[in-house]
Length: 208
Image 1 (cartoon, one colour):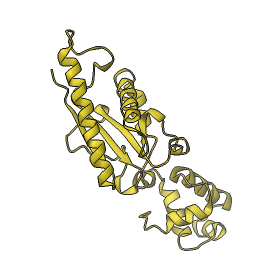
Image 2 (tube, rainbow, N blue to C red; image 1 turned 180 degrees about the vertical axis):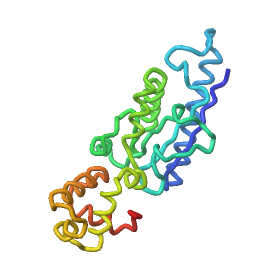
Image 3 (cartoon, helix red, strand yellow; image 1 turned 120 degrees about the vertical axis):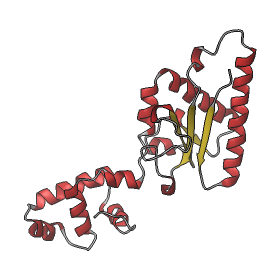
């Protein structure tokens, strides 16, 4: 029995993407060779790898995220494994990404293979953990979708330069309530400073 694993790569670096695709093909070929020579049927730590899709994606906004991804292979959500491509070794910590579900561009081939093996083992034995990990990174579109109608209204008014007190008077709410909506929206958009929120509001977001 041959493993049927689909690979989807979202990255703007075509050279890196080409090398990664070759590495993945070689890895699956080695797995198939192992199981072909094994006297036992496909089982053990890699017992549930068939008919799955591994999605490698960089953190560029244009690629979206695991939440809004629609598989071209029609792979069900629970059969998808998302691995993030990061630029710096420390990036997975700041982005709260589990180390085994992220690879760094500077990782040697041996380390990429090791991380892939750890991710696949986790996929087989703790699929719920894999789903949770893939949901840690949200694209801007999904973060915006999570905003309430009140939060969107407050941010839209703020984008025009209105202060919290002015918005409070316009919406007949207390300034404390408006500030609470702002803080909640900042948390959902993953921004920590008003200056960062201002940049988000200026990036052609559809808050309507």
